[in-house]
Image (cartoon, rainbow, N blue to C red):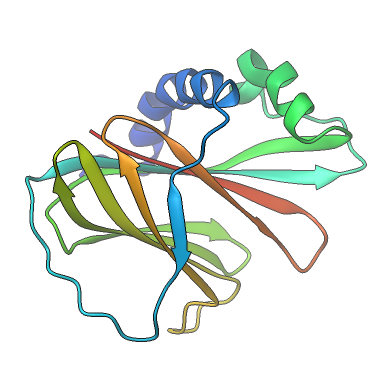
Length: 168
């Protein structure tokens, strides 16, 4: 595993390219609320899973210098917001393993790589607004391999967080 500072620098070009690609996409991966207790059969090859988070704050115009290349696209998605890249993590996972991304202020995004088959990858994406063990919001996502997807959550302070996930 790379130190966070090295992983963050290496991930920024990937994030910028992914945002440019994703901004033009209209279709979203299939998502459905998680059943309370659904057993998951983990299968598939190990994959490099990347998770990153961008905080969007209403009423400001500040933008993280790491996001300058996608400034205009972010402004189209959420006008009248400032943007800050708050976290990046990337690790090689086996099916059934989870990548936890601490977003600061008690917010945590967890991405469990469930399986991969026929060019599609299944994830369980969970978001918590505090460090409790209970996920406050979980979603199953089935997405094409090598395609980034986003989910968005509103925070109690009125800001939003855009969480990007991809696997290759």
